[in-house]
Amino acid sequence: MTAYQHGDVSLQQTIVGLAQTFVGSNNVNCLEPSGNFGSRLQGGSDCASARYIYTRLSPFARRVSHSADEPLLTYLEDDGAKIEPDVYMPVVPMVLVNGAD
Image 1 (cartoon, one colour):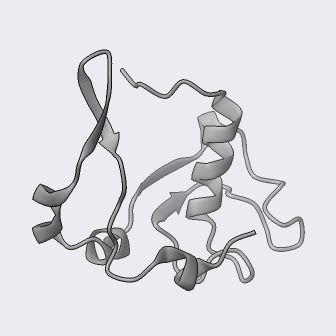
Image 2 (tube, rainbow, N blue to C red; image 1 turned 120 degrees about the vertical axis):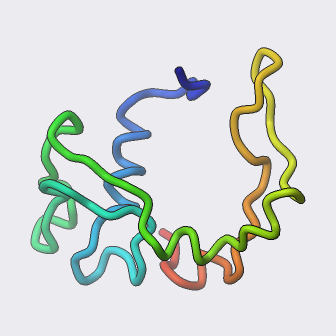
């Protein structure tokens, strides 16, 4: 179950973007890709359908968020259930690592 209330396509595009490893996508990827996540030539738009690609959290993602900070996180709620942290507190701002569009 998930509390994600937006379109599937935007979630799929975000996951693909976080897992791309080709030059020009991310300096450091937060997700490890397994499958076709697109090419540099097409800017990642030629990735496989979401049902054919898989990811897992990269070791970098656990190192960029210190485990001692976890008790400090405040969580958003949906129908009385905790769903996600309100704000993540990485050791270094990810916008400095990977940039933004």
